[in-house]
Image (cartoon, rainbow, N blue to C red; front, side, top):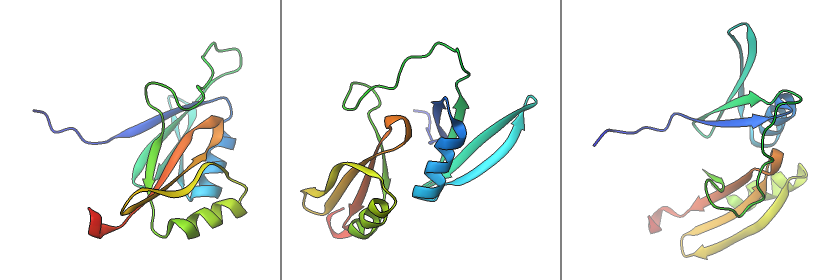
Length: 131
């Protein structure tokens, strides 16, 4: 069996600057700007993952983002410590919570927030004694 390793997430957006600003300001993502084939490119690093931002030019025909929950890729999850403190900080920044912090089972506390373009992001705080 091949050894698969995580490489990147690819986000398409009509407003790359607003998207990266949200992730940088709200979640502390590192923003990386470069040029590719003579065109500006914006990438981010968040939680160790590479996130590539692809602009959707005006007039390009693309489907609207789905509203969660839906079949297929539904959300991405980020591990945090002290989720209640993290949630309080995000609320101060005006972040919308689609599910408040709660414990679905012993040793795990989670919440869901809405990112730009309706992206669903899960935050997880795992107690190591349960893993």
